[in-house]
Length: 250
Image 1 (tube, rainbow, N blue to C red):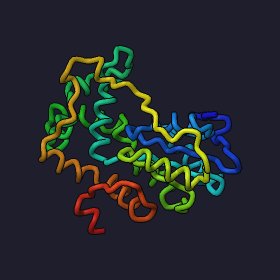
Image 2 (cartoon, rainbow, N blue to C red):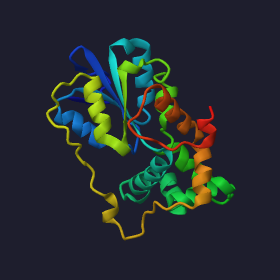
Image 3 (cartoon, rainbow, N blue to C red):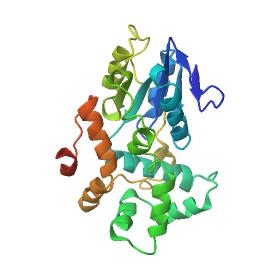
Image 4 (tube, helix red, strand yellow):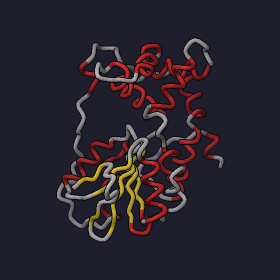
């Protein structure tokens, strides 16, 4: 039923409409995918680097036949989660093959350290910071998926649904109504990933961030907040995000 990166067909069909899931990293994507599968929905997943050409193709060729689901999350919380997941997967994982990323994560062990280096421009670790930001889930943000692909300014409101991690059940109920699924088989949202931090010593990963770094990060991630504000204003999201003042004044 699922079509993840199927290069031959690109689009899966449910009824007369192609369902496309824009899987923004670290927004409970695997749980949403399991929910689709539990309700017998065919779909195409657009995720990380292959997503951009796929979404651009959809916008150019088959936009009128598509319905989009996009998962979203507070940008700072997504940044922290993305760093920790990629440090586990690309930095500490014995099977990881990118030596430069392994080295970068060895130098920068927490999201707070990463933001420290970005904020201060510390010369000894700035190249590692740039490497992490440009080659991990942090890079693949809402601007990448929605603005660069053309989706945000091309898709009408009745053909797209935004599902916030902070209110998954509310977002999926809204999707079911919008997509006219009259009787979903299962509204329960599955939790699909075990907590990977359990495999490490306590303290290996951190979600802590100094107030000065959190404030800096709200400006550093301003583009992502702007896209989220646009979504909230023009499409609606069943969650009350807190936005930087620079965004709210626009």
